[in-house]
Image 1 (tube, rainbow, N blue to C red):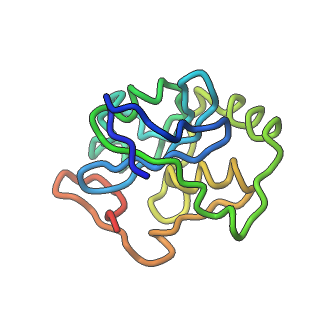
Image 2 (image 1 turned 90 degrees about the vertical axis):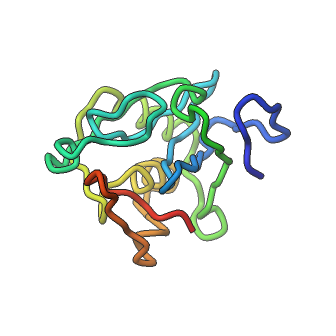
Length: 153
């Protein structure tokens, strides 16, 4: 079920849940870590809530691990809890997930739309397996601004 900002949600995220955020052209992913916060992999120039990157940050192939309020990351976009691989992979223990996620906050990591994007980041935290549904199906697009992103399915 999609959640629209400003509308009460019947399904609030639980610690360790994957959050799929529907940007106008692509999906951004974050991990819910409690108390209204998420941890996510964002291109270094991303402005909270904007969900986009500059040409330079994508060309540098770098991203920053951030801990921010879910409401700030979502902005005006819809989102949903989407633990998309629970049917196939067993989620790791929540304490391990949180320890690893928090240890990465503030670090600059390699970024690749094919192998190290925001979806890979959160699925690796939850399942121990970096996976991207869209990359796996070849749904990659490059926008007119030079941003690398996922096509919405």
